[in-house]
Length: 196
Image (cartoon, rainbow, N blue to C red; front, side, top):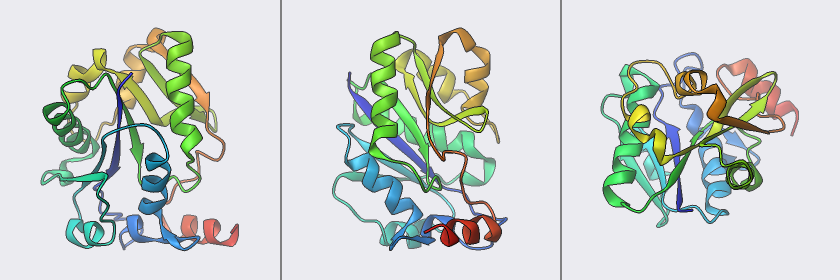
């Protein structure tokens, strides 16, 4: 199964007041951590969707196996970044069978989180495989191409969770330890740093 990864990194980090994609964690930026783990998988291509502070973020993350897509409409919310990433993915890779959507601020993501989604899909035959943590489900999440049209029709602030809620019978989940730890505020970041 040909699977690509889309990393959403377009937000302005308004609650933090500086680009969280560039926060240092264990000597790497948060975004670099996610990119590195994605590169460890067999998934190709890897697309990073940028928006706010795009030039600065792209400059620090150049890699010949990573494609950057600039979402000029990033201010409209997460849906526009999913659409920007997925439409680029489909246009350049007609044989793509599934995608994994990830975000730039899950500091504890590992290659195994991506691989577990793919394994669970093969095991169950379900078309959506989400990560579960802290009594919720979320990213990273795998969608088979059956759902590409639904993803491309998302609008506004809604993310892909809307589709998970619409098709619960086609969803399976895998545990992502510490998946609930993401960085939205300075307090979140300080808590993360103190655990190093």
